[in-house]
Image (tube, rainbow over all chains, first blue to last red; front, side, top):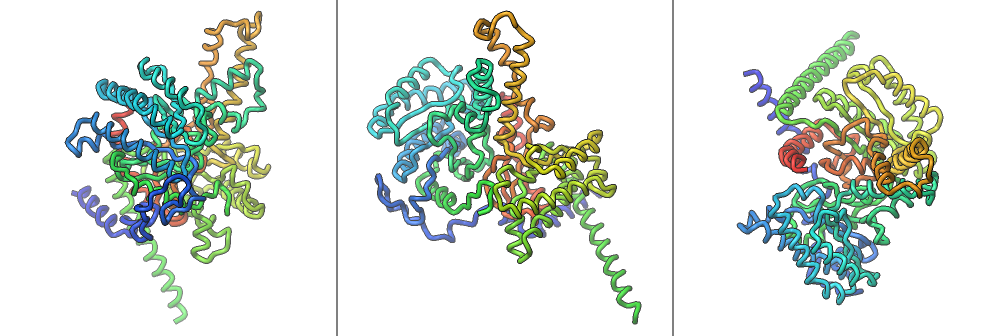
Length: 289
Length: 290
């Protein structure tokens, strides 16, 4: 009886306390702001939509494409169809980013932790990635987009590994636009891998222990394939607010944007909202401006 | 007539004590309810917004940080009352050394004062039996602050109930680099005690690889004294990690209440824990899959 009373009192006090409802999400609603003119479609070097500034565009955007399975369940579809929709959405996002002048895009396609999913789903994902890498090779060549795949890659099927090597070779010469796919990737694996590489080189006398610094370490990470290894903006969909062992070192100063929308529903409007949010932020890097 | 102000003060004091008791009782009720569900073992805080708080209230520059310290003490009290064993706070980043020298000096003076106050009998350290660690590149601090930090660490080394990790002169990337350097030294030490007949080039690849496998970066990290945080709370609405616990927060729940750090309160903590409880079963399921 006493506990019931305590519970009711606690509930009442929680309800009466101010700021429970609106103040737990950082930024004010974009509805109050000027509407983004999404009819303006950017091609090449044209001006970005109203509300966005070209000089403030992030150089590197990373995405955690969360929510494919939930989307499929909500739509009454199979999980595989959810992942298919997710893959299509990634290609669309890529096109949009390049048109807006964002030249490096990273996508968390398959985490090391995803191996724990049901075997059928894992096989489906491997097949999907293989299919897309094969069918989109000409597209990436036409768009002069370099494709890099980073990750452990020791457990993935031989056929997928072959496709990865093929597309990387076919697009290696392109310098401006870059898609980085993280497959069988984990941020901790990346850091461990860099650490082992440095220790090995130190033992071989190739580097001295006193020369080991942050710049050297960064050059040993798997993201050394790009000039901009640290994303300016990370977008995670589906409402989860976690990094889930994606880039760890690389996200030191990255602006994080968590969207409640499921990945297959993350369309042009949602991307523009994320970019507007990014451009409004004051990036201090630990100093006071 | 002359007694009236005194009487009023006593009445005021009495009301204030009564209100404090009611608040304390309500808080314990809330914690009792929260304890029905899973609780985080480790909470981390990025205490952002002190300066903006001072500006908003029209206070002088250092006052925001002082108000921030009071908010920190309240938050620690709530955490330890709730039974959370580990709390980590981002007190001063290596990047913060690039701020104006006067501000850095003022922050160092404040930190020295507050670190010393932890050793007082009435301090929260004694109240809750807190073991305090100072995590960071302490060599970057001035002698006084470093000496005070070491004194507190030694004085609380035997405490075991709860733990407070104060990240000072800290960057996660620096922590990782220092761990790598330590691993390099350890590995070369292992080599010297190992096969000395042939150089490293003569050693077969398997032996070399095996020795490198022994190098455990995680053990060499300063934060290895605590498990990974379950929740990371950054105040002031900014959603970025600012080079804090990058290795450790890969699977942590991130919260970014809009309140500036001196405005942070019980309701923000409760909300963060309720969200943690909502996601708990899903996260446990994922951990089992690994």
